[in-house]
Image 1 (cartoon, rainbow, N blue to C red):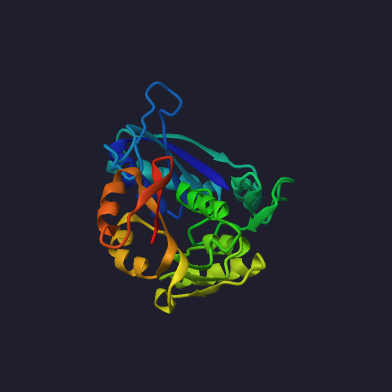
Image 2 (cartoon, one colour; image 1 turned 90 degrees about the vertical axis):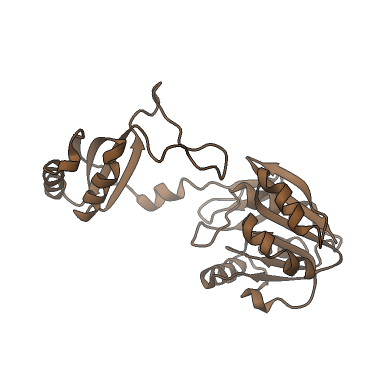
Length: 295
């Protein structure tokens, strides 16, 4: 594998990157060329806020090619284009062989939800204090326990374990099935894990089997009756639209648990649910909140 490195002002980045992809680059990445200097430029502010600029003032573009000849040919062709004015080729270098699978796996460590409750990828051993473990590898469906929205839901489940508190559970928009699996492990009497994405349904089924728990996976229209616990970790807009449906699924005295909500969206969620339930903010992490209601 050979890496071609270029330096570009903001206005030329898109054209140069597109050209490299058209020239059979196996991957193209863009980084802040001024990173770790006084000129470093942050692009993102609070979660959900639109960045003021869509690119750095100066960028380093790195393109991977299968051979040195293909990298040099790509550099020669790109340099000859009008849109390359003001850009610079910084170098072409062979990369040392990498175990990409091991490198990717190294980015995903066990995640502590509570002191005794951990999410652990299959290539790691659970820590000694992990009395409760969900084995889960990153995949196509959302939910590995690392995002604050998922973590807050898991913490709520762990703190409401036992004594029949969870009862019959509906995980609406189940993604990887991580919340449904946690409920099954913590004493739910039955769990329905539903999602509009067939890939998520398949993922949830496989993850449940790998963790030795039984959950019923399917599409949203397969929800039946009422539930002691209804969980929905999606986003604020669909949560507002789904307010009547979700609340209708909560049994009397049951719990509604909503996540995927930014702190600044709390009031609009409360307003949307006012005809059906009284929502309150139960937890917050990194600009995200967990909202719950007892019906």
